[in-house]
Image 1 (cartoon, rainbow over the protein chains, first blue to last red):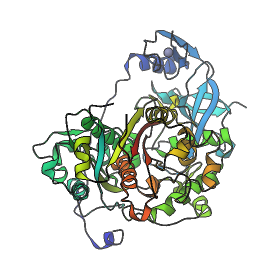
Image 2 (cartoon, protein in one colour):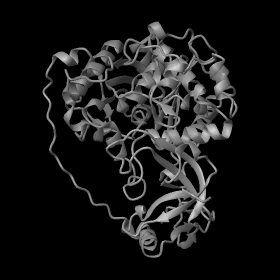
Image 3 (spheres, protein in one colour):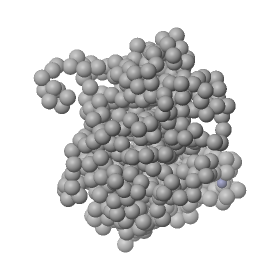
Image 4 (cartoon, each protein chain N blue to C red):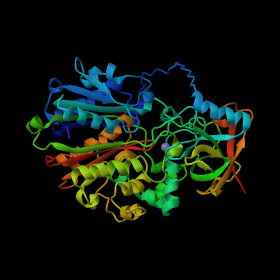
Amino acid sequence: MNNSLKHIEPMVHHSQINVPYTWWAGDTAGRFLKTLRDEQTIMGTRCNHCARVTVPPRKTCPTCFTENQTWTAVSDQGTVVAFSVARRQLAALVKKVPVIFALIRLDGADTALLHTISQVDPAEVTIGMRVRACFSKDAGATIMAISHFVPTN
Amino acid sequence: MGKQRVAIVGTGQTFHKSHRPDVNGQELINEAVGRALVDADLTIRDIDAIVIGNMDHFEGINYVDCWSVDGSGGFMKPVIKLTTGGTTGSTLAIGGYHMVASGLFDRVLVIGWEKNSESDTTGAITTAFDPVWDRLVFAGAISGLAAEAQAYMARYSATDRDGARVSVRDRKHACNNPYTQLRKEVTVDEVLASPMLADPIHLLDVCPRSDGACAVIMAGEHIAEKITATPDWIWATANRHTYTYLGDANFGRLDSLAAASREIYAKAGIREPAKEIGVIELYQPYSFAGIMWIEDLGLTGYGQGAEFVWSGATDMDGEIPINPSGGVIACNPIGATGLIRCAEAALQIMGKAEGHQVPDVDLALSTGFGGCFWSDILLHGRRKPDF
Ligand SMILES: [Zn+2]
């Protein structure tokens, strides 16, 4: 089959469809994103049943299935719980490879936040590493208002 | 327990390839359906209902349930679509089982398919991520798996050689399966020398992109034995979800698979899965999963998966062969992949696996995995279950 591909002209249609989407963040994510943009503060929600603090915030605790009504600020510092280094420049990647993806449990939170680590040699990154958020004033009310994380030392 | 027991009475697959420019979607589906009907010695008129699925975003053509009747044979029949990401194929199998077990349908045709060659697989997978939180900073399927492997390796001191050994096994097994896509043996050193995609995953650690379809025919207990002398009885199914955002997962453990397997073992009275189960078709999209997830399945203790694999226990002649078909690393038409695991387990029970047959299989396990850490399992048996 691979060889035959060289000898045929398959009839193909290259789509020109363009379907732009607009996603509403909603009140819960919106409050987090506005606080992040305006105050450079990272907020989580606390479940009144299990006491777990989730970042990103949740309107409903996923394990207790009850409404979260308590907001709490968490630290801009945390611990790497998992990471990977993307080596291929995929179209969907905004940053230049190598990109260090990391799941970071911020101090005061019980879940990890997905983000990137920069300004460090990928070979130096370890699970358990302490990192700190760097903020961007230009990114608007998006998660990129944290531009990246850096090692604390 | 449903209203009636359910057995698989026929299976069919395409010869899976990287590209199938010679057929469109419904024509690809038709090949698998035709082979399943021949295998069961049935005609399309015998089929009561159809359950079909894929992941729409890979082809950019939605609603296969509506446009595929010349492929599926669904003309003037009930057709239902199921799609659950990576687990689509195994969810289809569980859905077909539910339909027959309910007693409402006696002969259900289950179809999973994908033409991954028709789009950018990584870009399409990224559309499954949350756009506000995960999608702005992340892309593709591999990095999430890589983070899982990193967390496991840090916890249990596993190495990239351990992962490579799993890839060597599956790629060797694939050489015995004429339907699969990649049939070429590799060595541990070749895996480690292949390009690094996302640390610690090399190119030869992961599945390819594939075009392919799979069809499975399920029948109720009062007719299954009339259709075939060797039905594959579905003993039990289980499914677990854990996840909303990527940061919720317990990285380094697949909690959903552990919980689903314990439900299966409890239903079937299995105490020592590595001894009692004869073969496993594991939905294992990359090599490291072949170490971590067999621990979650309870084949070994935590941290002992690599040693178990290196011992040869999961090779074709081992205590519990895993992926005699070559598994997902050899072939991954995503919406079909979970159903291929189910069909391959059925072939092992029915004694129809030919060049990759494991001798005397009484119980087989097939699984499905979704990129955000959820799991499906089916338990297959040669004997009709007595529960
Ligand atoms: Zn809670």
